[in-house]
Image 1 (cartoon, rainbow, N blue to C red):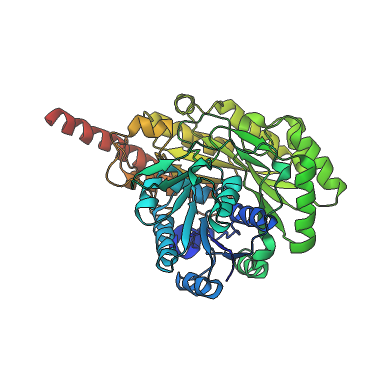
Image 2 (cartoon, helix red, strand yellow):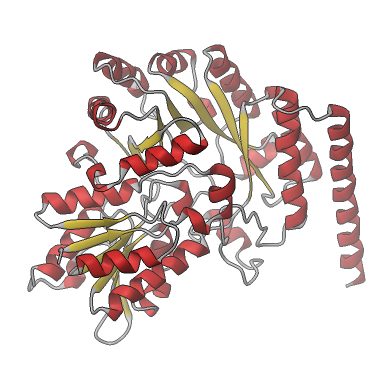
Length: 477
């Protein structure tokens, strides 16, 4: 028997896009942070890493093998896939929780989805849901349950549970950690690193691992869900990050790092200091980040290049300034172009996140986004449609229009779940077109640009016909 079995429920095999198209598996970083904290508190911890497992039978096997006193299903809250609150993850979590409950084990869940909707998890037998940042809460809750503390469990900040009256109680939210350097490094020794290496090399020819330097995001984009950290933002010191990177290079030898931060290097001067520290330790590893166009200037970009940054993903979202303003994105189209230019001049791959379907977006706005991609020529794009997650200003805006489906099933769902300007099939065609059009312009594919232009004109005509039909229907009603 071990004290605690930590698990997560994101099986790549359950997500078509991640399994068949992307296949970029990473160990569950937030789960591994929780494991380190619990081990530092004296608990014996086992890990069930669902990522590369073929089915859920393996969870039953490890549960039986370790016979835990406590089951904690702790999602990787740094990974955007967990933040999407996908239905297949929720369903797997609830099946895993049932396994624990059937064995008489207390079950705790920590995830973006559970923070958004604790009642669904508690109604299915989960004992406790951690609300928001879980690092301290998971330790205090484990102490209470495993050490038979006389302390009233309701005094632990940041939890939801069923009280003695069979109602849901929620304690006050816990203040987020500020001193991130005090947190032990993730317990990567619990992971089968070689299994990940083999998986990456078999598909991509190199091996990537993940790190994180910050928590949260202070910006107010209307569609961005923040169930874990809210609008707070905390950052590790460059020295602490460089130290971890040096250890990672020494013990795991990755060829590449994905920094999973929502915004890498927001604090002025941080990137410049990080570049110096990582070079001083000879800990350079090629890496990829996500950041904002308005944070890119010549000094920052030069420091990124010196630190061996090879790819930057920018939240461009739209080529229409009116759409960017409606999203409260806080950037301009000109800043997107300038960031692309600066990064390109340093040889850093520059990639755009593009989002279609935001309320009020017109065909003209869509055309401006297509023009942005065609003129800036990013090295890659990720195309999505606006997804109203609970707790966002966007969700409040469209909540009366949301249909019975409230969450995407998989990461490639791309369904418009409210009364959008066009239907889901149109946006899916638009996304596929934009990928193919960019690939042709970059010389990645041999598709004829004239043919693609005809396809774009057909999409324009289709949108106009959709608008005309919708108008006729509205007039008839």
